[in-house]
Length: 122
Image 1 (tube, rainbow, N blue to C red):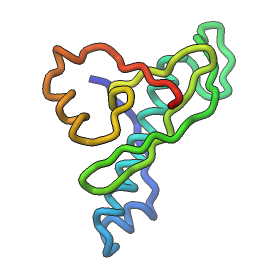
Image 2: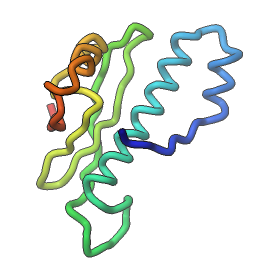
Image 3: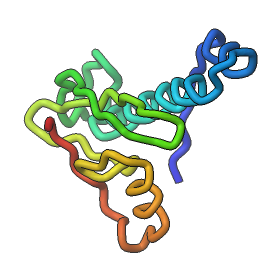
């Protein structure tokens, strides 16, 4: 299992605990965490940080595209990274997946879903 270092905005946490719209705050928190995980995964796949020049680099970032994921707490918009000349792969959700239920069902059977799911612009 991979470990990620996640940074949380104090204003987001303040809204989560003191705000009235709990679902909206949780959705923003989930969106922030998942976007940071996607950035960490693209860094690992490329073997280089953003703007880093190394001999081991395996490609270049080419922006992001929005990917909406419908969850029970609301719709969240993820910024899925693009890689120039290659496909970004993630285990967070399957290609063309739009709902949380599909994510849950794919995670219940990890033996069946071991491979990374390639994503491309839609």
